[in-house]
Image (cartoon, rainbow, N blue to C red):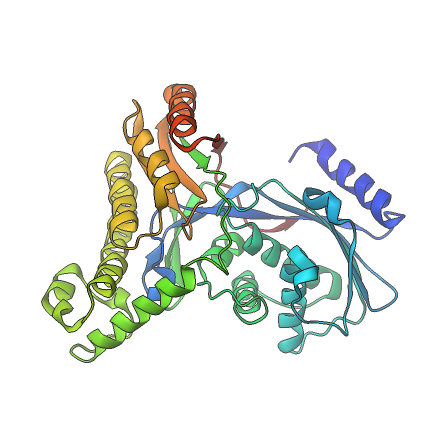
Length: 391
């Protein structure tokens, strides 16, 4: 991080909360999933990496039971107050429902806060982009609680607590991938994660002359009220139908060949397509990890393109904005692969682009997008970063 940023954040904390005494500065990354979307709740594999973009937090304990939250990204909301006696999700609590949910989840596990705290956040993740700003805030909050209150929690458990809080406090039925990628991030590595049992391995990403470029559609998406839960239910039902004819625990247990053999058990065309995506995306992700280990970034790019098509046609989570970004990317020189990333219904694409073609890529894709959609996309050339840390 830039040396001046820590000082700036402490200055801002002092401005908002009156003094900086006892305050410490922390960071948790955002994440991008390179391939393997909507596999995490279907018992398949995902292939995310942490980013150098993320969420900074400045925190300190208080003498009383009050919680005071402030975000430099939502200055107009001012300081949002709560207290340890009032741990329920409320609309007026807005973004603070994410840190509150984590405090609640720690409490549920018997880790009780002895006092309140002041927390200031500054995020460099574009809001509503699908790069997991909410999961970043959850992991960051958990990391801060461990440091301030001496709780012994592994990074893997921080991910599980973040997911639990989002499921049970905020009512978003998310899988584990986002929180896991953020809590377990490792610089210059992606995480090949088996979401069915949380076994994982780090795979080095050797980009020689290529860059990862994220294109943010600027179409706002709210996961809780989007069709995310609907897709989950459709996949679940398809799985139940398949379980009548073959002994599987998850759709991710099936190879493409087995799926083709037993898919007649699925009684509805839409559910059939949802299940086909879950199965083929999982197999693509396994292949993607293998080709990367062989150093074949070109083959990896082709799998990214196939993944986007499956998410568009079989899972129907892309929409005109994301399809425009991906299809425009496919037409550019120096692009190895491009796909939607994250939950869908807006958000971002991730592309692997030859370094000397990045400028043209941003210009051309940006132009095509603005002409077709009517407003601009934002582009970020990103690096793969590590997990949460105290600065």
